[in-house]
Image (cartoon, rainbow, N blue to C red; front, side, top):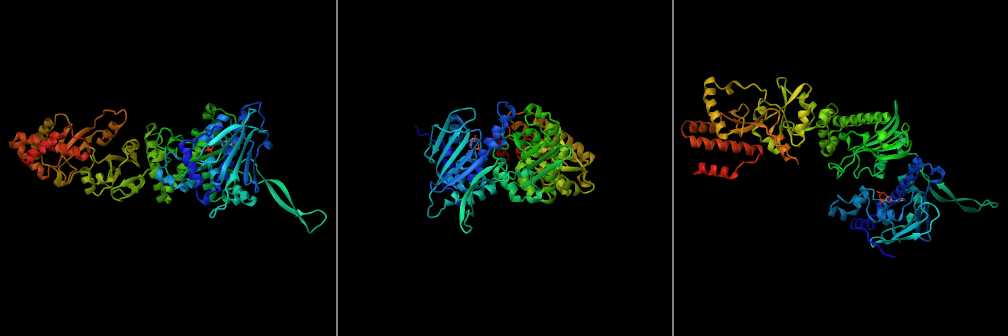
Length: 626
Ligand code: ADP
């Protein structure tokens, strides 16, 4: 028989299991029971669509038995079993759960971290066993197979004998060592407690042979031992239980058990609806972004049960894209069991449930915004981007649902604020909601364009995420206030008396600006006196809908759209540089050209835009130095 090697990843996980810390070992039983339960579900589900197969509930169970003398713990299930190929693929490789893929090497060394956080599946058996034997007979085949492994060295597979369809897993429990006691995993009371703790709601009976004592017949002083098979779990799923009887820990336990995420959920919602459509649901808002969340691979959806039977692992129709981070399950009596995916999409009940769920989640998030801001900010750091995409997508169709969930950095508050908070703080004469968009708060704080708005004492929202400005444009107005970029042509702020140029001055500068524009040869649409600059000499602004930040972002996209904002070069006529410009304009055309180009280049740099010709720019700088 050939000894086969585990794949590298599996090997690492195995080693970690073997060296895991004591307190978490007991979860191996939860993991194995959960696999068994899934395997029975698979038969149940098959029977729904296969007339040849009859599912008789009494025939399906999981049995746990320990043999202290042989030091073995045996789990038997009447599930669907595995073919030889499945044995190879499922137990030789870390399957889809792939918890390891995104964990860094150093975190891996600290193995217990992972075990605490993830469902680790079948391999967890090696936390307590030094040999694992899996004998399995798949549904629809006469041939059984045996898989044996002593851990990291590898495994063997060979044909075997087994009467009933299903899987039997025998763990050879490790010997006690100086520090570790493994005997407990052979004790009835301990096993029973572990099953109660983690697997109580499993839908199928988990049976154990429980030893009891009773008075022996005849002599009433003598006690005799007897063995009785008992079902240890209550089999009532958590979502059917009364909310009042459940604790946060119960919900966290379920989240873990179900492997919905590797974090602790930020919030759970338990719905028991008996209105137009009857269903139970448990939903979770996670705290951390799953490693693949912002990739195409991520698949949204909730588990869908029909009357307690899992009919779909990820029902995407239950969640809008913008709430795709929500995890959990829905169980409804009103859904037909063997409904096809295509039909399900059009199912009226399902649509009602989806709508209901959407509103619940929205409500939960809104109450977090209001009452638990710190928690909400943690959520927002993970999933805020998704909400903003939600505002932008589908032509803004969902903005009403989402706009009150958005947070932006405030120039005044120096923290995140909601749009409502911004608008409530606006002075009466302020007409617009001002924002500045750029790559970091640091940069935005120094942005010349913000000077006038800040001078007025108005708050500015700093948008630093590439989607921000697009989302804001989609919202267009909030509580009847329009949004305005600090870089837009007209800020809607009346200039102060001393800012106003006299007619004469205006005529004088008009010619100067026109010449500058000619020198820049189409790089900007206009050059004009700035109404917003205070201490800075120059800046770029945009006329029209498309801002310079948006231009940058669109350009950087994979199939980069070559769109251009209508840029305006604004000059601060109160800055000493303007005097030099005027002098040059009057007397030295070459110098005037040089200054114009330099000012334009500076404006580009401030804006974070590339210089068309950096060499020429440095040459120009040198010219004024010598
Ligand atoms: P996961 O359950 O996350 O997929 P596991 O490592 O626990 O990861 O199991 C890998 C796969 O092995 C399962 O997905 C399942 O296909 C198969 N498997 C495990 N235990 C059993 C079992 N008792 N009966 C049938 N198949 C099983």
